[in-house]
Amino acid sequence: MKNTLIIMIIVIILSGCAAKTPPESVRMPNTGQWIDPQTNIRFTLENKDGVIAVTAAKDMDDREELVILESTFELGVLRWSYYIPSTKFTVRCRTLDFSDNTMNISWDNNVMKGTETLRRLK
Picture: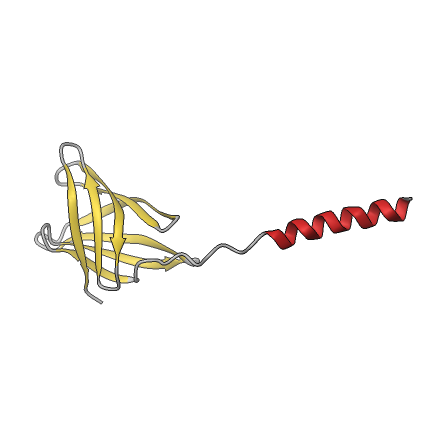
């Protein structure tokens, strides 16, 4: 009786494992430098422990370093926020879609919102 119970438990555990399939690979934006041609802000994307992250931002017109507050990548969507010291604005961004060399994003800040297309530099 004891052996039958153990065998039944093993069969239940194994059948549960067999029913699960590994998650499909989630495509991530390419690492490197990305530029917003409207604002001339350059974003740096890096692979951190297998996950894409925005690690730096710089206004290329006045050379101001922007502060990355957070960056997350979940379910194929990259979200990040950054602070602009000169304006005291916080900008929140999220990808809408992307290809190898373009990334469509939505953004909002303290007073406005919109969409932009970033271009990959390298």
